[in-house]
Amino acid sequence: MGEAATTEFWRNIKPIANSFKPGVLPEVYMSDPANSDERYFVPISETVSSRPVWISPQRNMWADILMSKSAGLVNRHYHPHQIFAYTISGKWGYLEHDWTATAGDFVYETPGEGHTLVCYDSPDPMKVFFVVQGPLIWLDEDGKGVAHYDVHDYIAAAREHYASNGIGADYVDTLFR
Image 1 (spheres, rainbow, N blue to C red):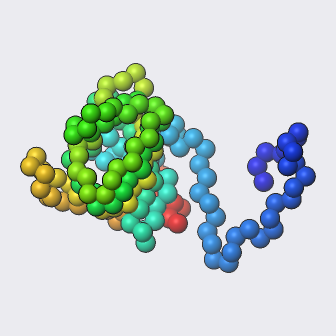
Image 2 (tube, rainbow, N blue to C red):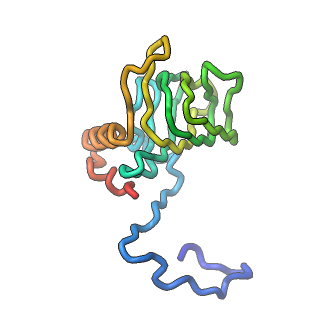
């Protein structure tokens, strides 16, 4: 149990014994992952990095915190699945849309959308919590697919990054659910 209750009305309720079914992995808990040791942020482009917080190889999905400390560009991409985004800080958007997301903004990206993700100069770094269902198809300037990026590419990049900075390649395995 977390913090002990003092005056809360539920303070005498007992937690469920054996709350996990057999074979179920525990939850992933991280304290303030958006502001953690920057070694956990995996480079995605020259200007943008990503902190994985949950990965499902079986579903080709991940949740991450995308970060850019200055003006940045991820890439032009198309995704055949939905994406969810919640802006923690900074400013970002898509060249193809008429909005700019700032702290507290939510974005639902519909399946079948292609766009160019950019990060604006801002006093605060751009940090966005994304839930991604891959693959992402990298696009050229004409909107034609030139490569793909899915959960397996993400895992490989994270393993390489963590192996090179002292965290250890196996750290990424702790995020698999």
